[in-house]
Image 1 (tube, rainbow, N blue to C red):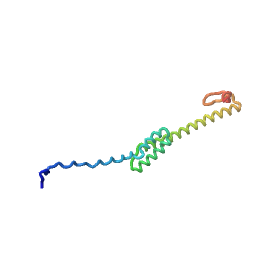
Image 2 (tube, rainbow, N blue to C red):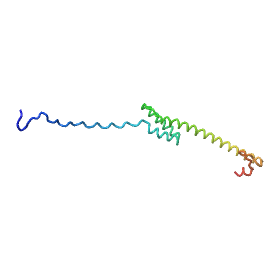
Image 3 (cartoon, helix red, strand yellow):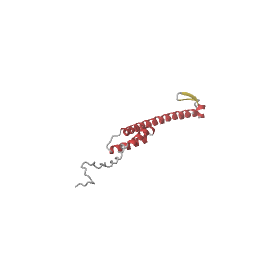
Image 4 (tube, helix red, strand yellow):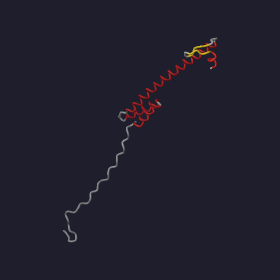
Length: 134
């Protein structure tokens, strides 16, 4: 039933197809757990080994909980531990050296008080007047 006013055209263009709105962008995947902390840990491992060691351990634990490996955190733990051991060794050597020098000075002063006119301190002969003046 066509009417003269409205001719039927079987080939009318279809209505434009609208696409669905794009899916919202997925929330950014969090960076590797412990990565930022491990960067801070490796820097601090050189400057303050104890703090770097602690932060490295925390970053390593966070990474392991997420099932990932974290080489920076492991490096921070190793560097921090090694530098702590080296620091302890340096302190022991320094304190023993100071004790040896102090003992030598005390022994020299005692020898001067006992009547010596000169004493040997660290391989040099020093008059007792100089030793007692200090």
